[in-house]
Image (cartoon, rainbow, N blue to C red; front, top):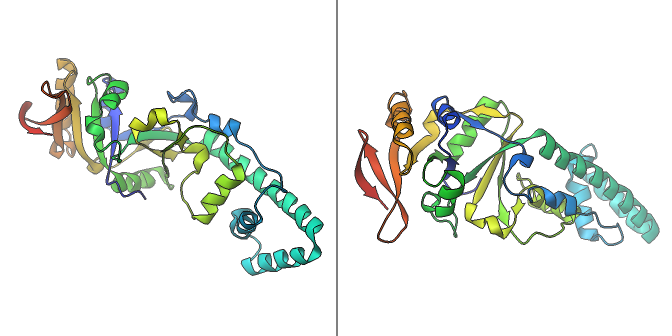
Length: 293
């Protein structure tokens, strides 16, 4: 798991989001519902190289450690590879070609399953270029209706454990990497996962254009659209200063009347008119009482 201790989820100012907070659930969406028009297109641009072109070392590692051949022991696999090497280049290439087809079929099935059967919830987390998501102007603008919405700060590990519990299965997780989009060799993507014993999704579902780097995104995936969590995993709620008075009073009333959330730190995010940074102030008894840069 990533070292960042907190995750931040930005919400617009609508009653559905207030209901989700009051009843402690997160909504998970299909990838094709996301706002990035290039979401998932890497899978369409990816390719499988021919057996002649693919590195023997990586192929051997894939064959030895891939779950596609989990019924064969490691010792038997090593013996098989050794015998084939002695049979000559033609036998080796034919074997390599057949096994890569097995990998291709398994890989396509896995990617299809992740795209078609899983739904995703997106968060922001601190990073070198986004030290504090809470002060990120673009995040407040794009995902919280220009400081009219609110942000929930979650304890990352506690949230994932809680979702695991309520979902009844392990929640998938992936830190998004930002790169110039280009075709990806499926075999290399699979090999990196095997070699690193990675629990993440590989580049196919965890890479976005550098245009989105400001999001510093971390995703969680489940097969359900709506998953509950323990409200104790919330450490802070931050309300945008432009939220309407009606919604602000409703949200504060919701928090103060909740048996768990009434103890959560509540702040207001505002634009400092001196330096135009987004900062926060503590809200207590419906009044601003302190500044927290």
